[in-house]
Length: 351
Image 1 (cartoon, one colour):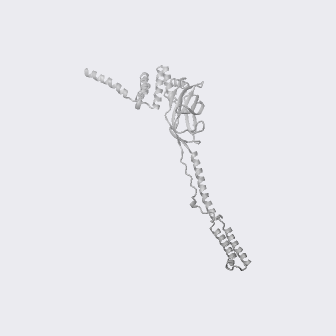
Image 2 (tube, helix red, strand yellow):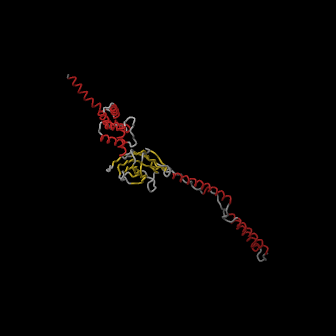
Image 3 (cartoon, rainbow, N blue to C red):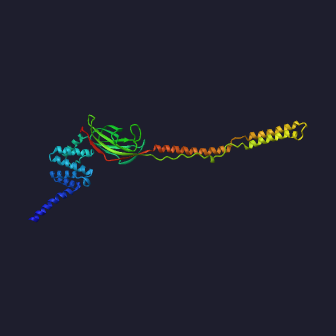
């Protein structure tokens, strides 16, 4: 007898531990089985315990939706309408898109759920977890799904709640797509930082019933620009004007020869009459030197060098224009990277 008592006590002690160690999925399975066996009191116990499991053994959102739907149906059949309404409201807020499967749940349960869904105004947001958009080109798509028809306000705010841009104000039926170009109300791209996508559900009087805050981080991705090509160095350019050396030498030689012709006979034969012809010859020689100076005057353009240098400068100018156009295109291709966190529902005092 003593051994039997000890064994019974040990079994009683072990049973709660085993139950406590059960995962949310295991409890959900037992709850659904009890519901199908019409054992609603037992089903309610298992289903509530499955929803209370936390940490690594907790139910995923899809399984939580299933647990709430069966728990709400269980409460309907137990005659606890207020409790069923509370459970169905939790279900609507968890997934406003959810509809009860009428092949599983009878009209009595479906009608009770639909009544709560129609009066519970809630929205769920579906956005990319990590994406990039081109500013001024591509759009960031915000997909919204509502529990029932009502008015909403969609806005982008800073992390501290300060409004940056209002994206949409108006009604939502079953679903809605709101587009955002990554700019604030002033047309300026959001700098790197933390922001919020704020969706507010309104009642018939325009009061906020609840809000859904979807935090996100942004970072500007600016492409590198190309360096400007340097102009051609002076060492690569040819001289475009002739030097003054040959012209000055021609002028000096002409004038010197003219002077010699004009004055040398007088020096060599002093006192004799100077012939007028030698002045004519001297003048002709001097004019020859002057002509040489004029035809080879300093700074005269060298046509071939001018053409060659112009071609070199034109090549540089074309390269510079190509770089300017490419850099302008790259600056227009600034992209905004958006990383979104899990949405956080916030109830209002008006609810």
